[in-house]
Amino acid sequence: MKGISSKVTRAIPSMGTMLCVDNSGAKVVQLITVLKKGSVHRRYPAGGIGDLIQVTVKRGTPEVRRKVHYAVIVRQRRPFRRPDGTWVQFEDNACVLTNERGELKGSDIKGPVSRESAERWPRVAATAKQIV
Image (cartoon, rainbow, N blue to C red; front, top):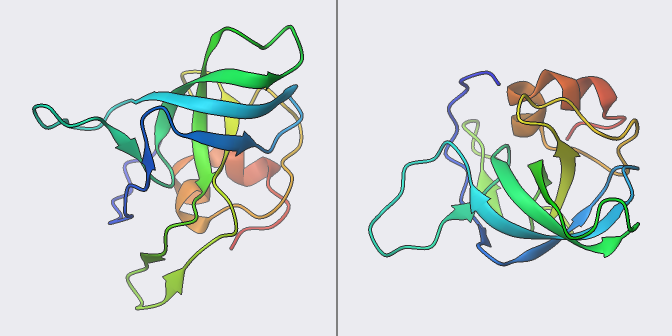
């Protein structure tokens, strides 16, 4: 993980669901917690693009269900602003399953990946077909 700073709005709350867009066998995942982020007393953690999170698989193959996995958020619905002034918004909330070092479990990513997550996670950038 590279230490690239960005002011992305943290839009996906704890216990929120999102799509898993790789071919690891998971379809829908639920966010448990956000890792390596500072916390505030009595505030549930929320995740944004490029964050490393812990998820549990709600729909998918029996091998990946009912276990805790690591994931990286690659798309979010909430608009966020880039340093050049442009606003970026995706159609859905999506993540890819990884290990704790950011290496993908699947071998393919469906759909576009945000530039912020691609810059922070080199393995995600190498696997992505389209970076927006």
